[in-house]
Image (tube, rainbow, N blue to C red; front, side, top):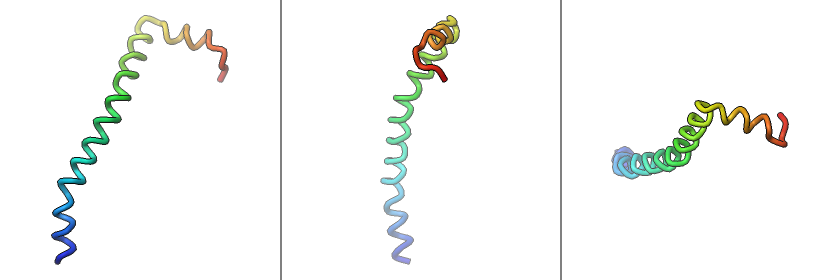
Amino acid sequence: MERRASLLERLPESLRSAVGSSLIILKFVVPFYILSDILLYFDLLISLLKNSPVRA
């Protein structure tokens, strides 16, 4: 029974940590997604990839 109480006591801290981690990931991913979406809209991303020295 003590173990269950211990897990319930740690739950808010664990959830806070998970939310913090997801916000950090979103802060890095969303700007790149928006940038690529804008570049694709203006057909700039394709031309950038065609002129890239790295070939896939």
